[in-house]
Length: 255
Image 1 (cartoon, one colour):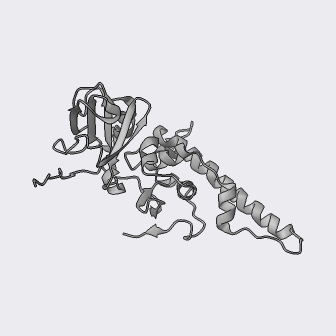
Image 2 (image 1 turned 90 degrees about the vertical axis):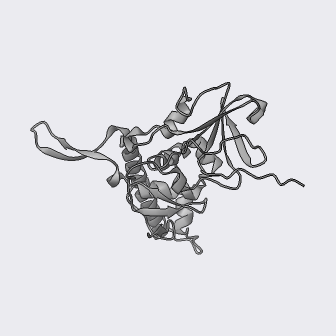
Image 3 (image 1 turned 180 degrees about the vertical axis):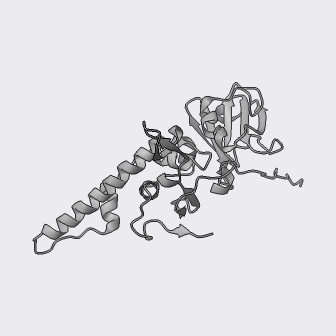
């Protein structure tokens, strides 16, 4: 009996299937892929492998694209790949080779933070903090230095970090006040973790924005990684705010 040799998986990047598309990895890509790949300020380039298939996901013809080495194997193998349709675009991954932070990290120097944090997928991710976001020195109307100003591209994350720091402090103050004034016979004290889970909420898009600074991910890629869980969101927003209450919430991985 002849043994069928499986192609060697040379990269664990996400796969993209573009129906009715013919071309290379940099030709006429949907904006969604450019949004994930195209942070040129980090040195990312649109290099990658592509292959046309007559029968891809959904039984459609089109191109399968993967960022990375042009020699990488990108054929359609439904028995070895997992695919999900997002609008007109399909995104997939090798079922036995899920992308890791090392596979997805952006080119060039990464934006540092308080360190690496282990999230619900079991991997350690470098989460940025407001103080580490790219910035420049601002000047007032008198021509005097007025302090560090976060660049426009990341200013929404600065605002997000400030908002969630204020919300966190307010939640802790409220919890402390409740404990101090509760005169019931058997007051129920919330643990710090319970308090956070009921008072801190953040949109998934904010979590994705935090990860996307250092990694080539968007909301759909994050979904395929089966993230975020509430724990992931809480950790990311607290780290972004340059404030972590204790190491039981987010354990820093030292290199």
